[in-house]
Length: 466
Image (cartoon, rainbow, N blue to C red; front, side):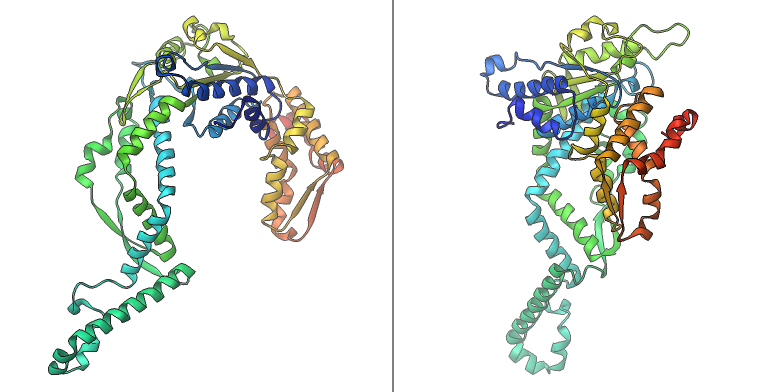
């Protein structure tokens, strides 16, 4: 983050998100303010709270993508939650505090992965030694030595006279054989050989059974409770050498990292850099209907409020303060308004950004400009079958025109419309790709019309297909 100015943050977001300049500007400022806060003196540092953002706009215009890409730029723990799935405390279902616990779990995985990468070389070496021990077991004494048969060819007196020399010769032979095996292992010559290894048995199934009942929401780690009953248990598995190497590398990497340090760093990272994306916040806005009451929508808002304001949440990794977590909320607000949220919650989202509906030109840019553009994805996918796809400009213009038209006439689902249209357009090519190997398919305006025009003109058909 040190080298990224707000302009550069926006530039990075432009690689993946078309239009929505106001939203990009707001999140860029919010992210830069985090960097600025870290440079403040400790007496004022704690007073500076993040300016949470409320994004207002229809589905498929880039709200989630902006938040996700922002988190990846800052290497920050990030989760997306749909607030409509939460219930007020006292009702059956997940309570809002679980989103903080989920964020901590995400941070744990991030830090753990990062630390395992740092010890990768060391873990690979340890795993290699373990594999060699399986392929050519080490021996503690001569009676266990696989080359003991050599000694049987000597008489007792000869053995006694030349025992030191024979022992040394044996060691040299074992060492030489081991090194030859090491070379074959590195060259991949042994990858397909089946061996038997011992792996640590996980008790994850038990955790899954209990977590659905809400035990995890109390901050109880079921694995910790029952872990001692099953710790150290191993089971034997027959796998290829290649697979065994991967399994053993992970095991060795886990042994080399300090999990207490991982937990400490993860909770700190959550408190200082965590981002929670509250999607569908408009679904819990407005008054409850007497004829069709939802499960306490206002109650969910009141439960979210203290977390957004700043509170201490207990997790199985310790307490986590939410004072400096950045909250980005989003909603279409078709049937409600931001003002329908409770006043206290409104005040905790001081920055409001309205995202624009996508135009025909936006669709054209979305198909070509981003680094993960759909046209680029389909080109690479079909290239694996040795089929070349070329999108002509008039073909892309026609695709953008159709996407915009269908959104206008049926339902506006934003850029997601392009996924269904592209899938329908290339359905025949994708199906016949193995037989089209070595051929080139050119997507022109006429090709698009031929494949999609009939569907678009038939409103009932397009409603179900596109």
